[in-house]
Image 1 (tube, rainbow, N blue to C red):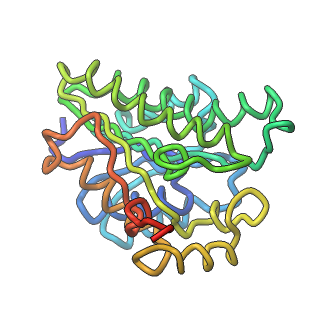
Image 2 (cartoon, one colour; image 1 turned 120 degrees about the horizontal axis):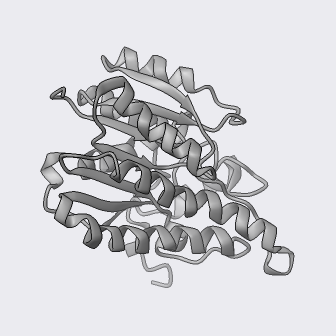
Length: 255
């Protein structure tokens, strides 16, 4: 058994997942870089940045809708380095569907990624954690705090991540496995730059003006929160959520 920590991170080809892999590398944590095969972003660019940060990692393709693939993903950390300590469930999709157009198929597909995928990653990872561990789910300000019109399935899934973490915090506490969530505010990622399903670049600019911090957030700022919740410094924190939003949720827009 080695004395360094290892992590698995889904959705790590770009955005928050990539930033988390780099943050872990700087902290001496080795990562399995999870990436969806059809993701247009290059997970090997993440691996390059991890190595430039002095860390070590491996790329592993998976679809979080598949229990078998998620099991293989979690096992990869054990096969490579002999242990698994941290699981970051970050993979997610966002789709715009007004309620009259929200078919059962569209609902189930998004739920299987954004909530079912988190459960599968946590289930597979926890079964491979022998000496305690940390599970961190990435929720969203949509669902975690606010509603979002035309995104009922996304909002419901992200709210579900919080409930999942609370339940697992209690269930896994006897094994010293902690479960927490991060609620990102409006963050500049490839997903939020999608002008069809999300804000788009112009929308991000408009949103930034309305946030007390005066700007939208960066992936690295969410990664810092994930790293903290994964660390020994957070050893007595479980079943909680940490909002990282530049003050958006404490701003009273009618004032």
